[in-house]
Length: 246
Image (tube, rainbow, N blue to C red; front, side, top):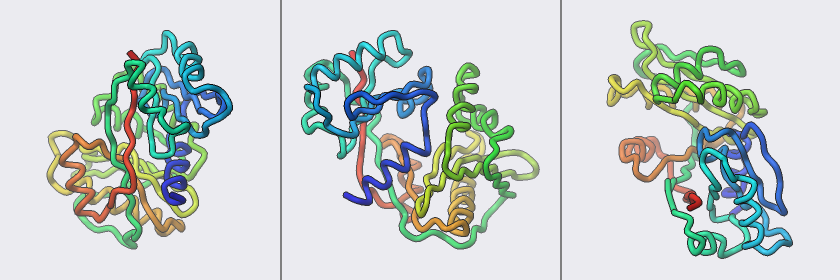
């Protein structure tokens, strides 16, 4: 449970919202509808208030929000029975996700392409990621805002082949843990080993900076990514899902 809490806290820090507030032990995050993680309720502590009443207050806070009221449910969600309470109120379970951990990081990275790693500044990376992952133009300023709010050490990775960008990704290191986010390959360049090369480079870079473990989140309906992460040695630590309001 200690490792689970360490990874969960690191992942929250690694993808901060534009705005947030605390409500009796629950963290409410707002980012104008870009990504569920940055636009949902994280039930960190039970608090003193009745859970049903507190859900109602959250619904008021998210009224008119692009995604409505969304809860992220992890094994740490408090109080116990929150998931069942939301189900009874008509909240739909979506986007079940596996959180995976790698306990041994590579010390060097080899493979095709030329890998560029930039610490701290995002530069053209958001636009590149947006193009590869079909991010709507209106969401790019929000993405830049989220990236700018990351306080931990961040590394933007871009893999190029013959001068063309074919893959990109983000590593966020907090103490001994590095999280991998937004690993994406140009659709026409997939199944060529580029994601594997990019991940290896990010992990070796993080290891040189003091990281000892890596973590990532992958949705359970992403069979290709699950296979890749299995091959790289990532093992499931826990799962979470979202409850989307009616």
